Image (cartoon, rainbow, N blue to C red; front, side, top):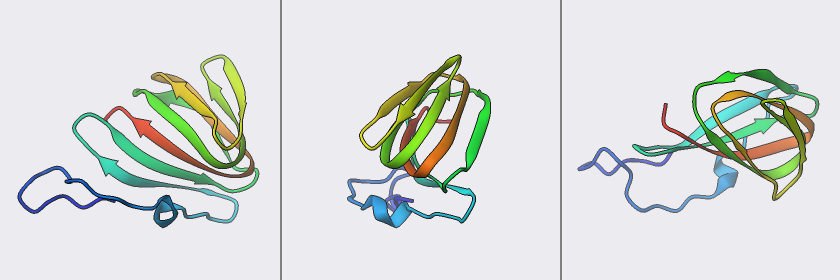
Length: 112
């Protein structure tokens, strides 16, 4: 996660590489915090082939950007196939992700 400045509670300007947050677990998923701020959070989610986050309720909005791989995103009653470059907005409510091919996703969330 980005490091806060010792004199402030929030990080100052920084640069990082997404590769430092990519971690795949055979048959599973990882979710790593990149940044937690006052107005938004950034996370990196990695899912191995065939792993599924079943549709479930979440109380915050999130914007997903697919970095690599392929998957199916469920948002409410809708489903979308997604590949690198796909962007999906999921308001608070029901959502899920099924990985078809080793998937990495950058998520920007409301703080929670």
